[in-house]
Amino acid sequence: MIRGLRPLLRGSTYTGVLFAYAGALASLPLLPFALAPALAWRSAPEAARIVLVLLLWAVLTGSVGLARTTRRVLVAAARRLLGVPLPDPVAGRLRAGPVGGPATSAGAAPSGAGRWRTPLWLLVHVLLGWTGALVSGLLILLGLSLPGGRLGGQVELNLSGRLLRVDGGWQSWVLGLGCLLLAAAGCAAVTGALRWTAPRLLGPSPAERLALAAERELLLAERNRLAHELHDSIGHTLTAATIQAAVAGELLAADPAAARAALRSIEESARAALEDLDHVLGVLREERPGTAPTRTLSDLPELLDRLRHAGAVLEPDLSGDLAQVPGTLSRAAYRILQEGLTNALRHGAGGPIEVRVAAGADGLELDVVNRTGAAPGPGAFPTTGHGLPGLAERVRLLHGEIDFGPAGPRHWRLAVRLPLRLPA
Image (tube, rainbow, N blue to C red; front, side, top):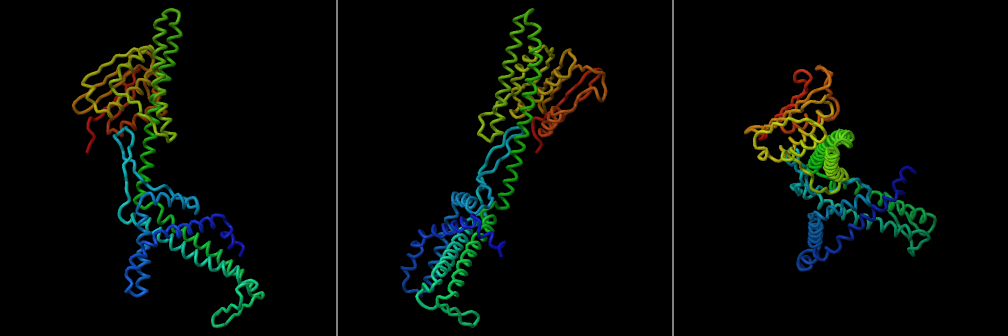
């Protein structure tokens, strides 16, 4: 019995009852609008007029639930007063943006059977509220009035054909306590019914669950893309800055002008990396980020200049109209070349680094070739970490082809081909 009373002693039971009563009281302002047609139809039988009032009242109450704001308020109230873990209504879905670009949001209004779930919840809410209020109110009144004969006479109860008279003795106290317990049980039943109904009518519909799952998937894809961007930007900056700092230290006394140029290159690289970092941190904190810094193949000469300041010897071969490469493809190509050149600086053994970018009518070809510090062989070229797997994933998303590995004696080659048009 004690275990059965535990739900009655929880605070959320009584807040749930208040929630039910609030729903009943909120429907009262609609009652005069439902009474007006019945009052005008005086010739109809009383039973028909009562049915008409109830039907009109139900229709008016349910129509309030068609507003999207109503559902948001009900979900927030149910979470707070019923303790039901309900997600926020789906007001919009994320729509996949261009490959390699951020996702965007598109409106999604409930349709079909989903439109009637909130009106149905309102009707259930009001019905339970009025039923609970009337029944528990009557039981509480009896529970407080029966003990001691406060009703001013005998009370007769017909229990299965047996007549029970209560005239103020100990039976009145037992019956009063029983009424109070039944009122408490009724409150718990109303709260339990609301808790059971809320997830089914206020929770996400199957279509909304699919939208939420798609939204989570796109958010994870966006964060994964940002992780690649951050790895490419910060990794390149740290590698180039380390080499440039060493160059500046060696040239500080012999060639101050060259040392100053190396330090300026470090400053420019660090500033660009900080822009990327600020954008990524804004997204990861779920703030509204500003415009993401976008670097394309038009920024490639600046990247090559920074590498030259770091002491790299570059042999660029740029052909085709790089300005006509689509923006998404151009941004991805810049990041691929940045990662390839970073790896060439980090693992190369000096000597010229060949960089080839060829924009043709059907595709974009990228090549980075550098000398290595070990003899060719399966273990001579480092392929672990996040750089090359990240590049392979980026190229795969763009429906391109990637090849990396030994290219002749003591050379390493990264070759990527990206189509200018995605397959249908």
